[in-house]
Amino acid sequence: MNLEAKAREIRREILERALRIGKGHVASALSWVEIAVALFYGTMKPGDRFVLSKVHGHLTLDAILADLTPAREGGFNTAGMLMWPGWPAVCSGSLGQGLGMAAGIALAHKIDGNPARVFCVLSDAELHEGAIWEAAMFAGHHKLRNLIAIVDNNRQSCANFTSDVLNVNPIWQKFKAFGWDFDEYGEPHLRGHDAEYLVKRFKLRSDPPSDEHWPIAQIVHTIKGKGIPFMEGNPKFHHQLPKGDEIEIARRALA
Image 1 (cartoon, rainbow, N blue to C red):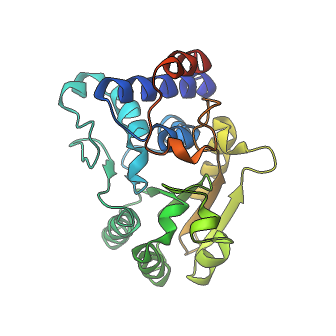
Image 2: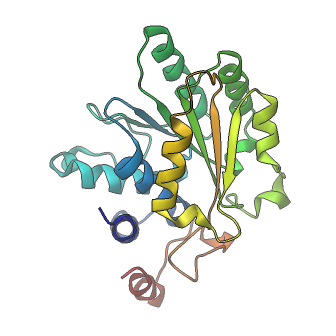
C-alpha cells in the first residue's frame, strides 16, 4: 500500500467530515494522520488494541475506521468519545484519561498471558494533565512491556504554544523517570509526517527483545494543521473551521 497516498486520502476525509457536521478540531486531527496511517495500515496486528487519548484528534480515527470497515459507517459516532464493538479502538473522554485506560488493558493482557500490544496516542499538551503521570507511574511499576505510548508532539495546545502555557519539555526525561524506555524522532526534517518511516520505527520499538520489561514512549514531532498551509502552526485554528474562500483553498491544498 502507498501510505503517502493513504495519508492524503485521510486528510481530505477529515476536512470533509468536519465541514459536513459543522464542527471538529481539524488541525488536531491533521497533525497525527501519518501516525494513525502507520499504525492501522502497517504496524498493528490482529488482537492489538488502540486507545486515542488525544480526543480532539478523533476525526482521524473516524476516517480510518470508516475506511477499514465501510459497512459500519452508518452506525458510527462522529461526535467522538466512542467505542466501536468488534474493532480494537477506543477514544477516551476528557483529556488525560486515555493512558490510564491503555495501562489497564495492558495489565489485563499481561495477567492473562495475552500477547496483544496496546498502542495509545497522546498529545503533548495533554501531558499537562496529572492523570497522565499517575498512569505513567503505574505502567512503569507494573513493567507493562506491551504498552506503547505515542506522543503527537505538535507543540500547541487549545490556546497557544505548549511551551508558553506549561512547558512539558524534555518529554523523554519525564517518561524515563517513571521507568519507561523511549524514542524521540521527527526532527530536523519532521519525519513524523513520513508514514513509511514511522512504520519502521513502530515495528522496531513495539517488538523489542523479550528481556526488556518496560513500557515504551515514542515522542513524534509533527505540525498541527499539517497539509493546509494557512492552518499549519496557527493557534487560532484549534477550534476554528475553514470558512468562505478558505474552504476551497484547503481542498486544493489536500488534493
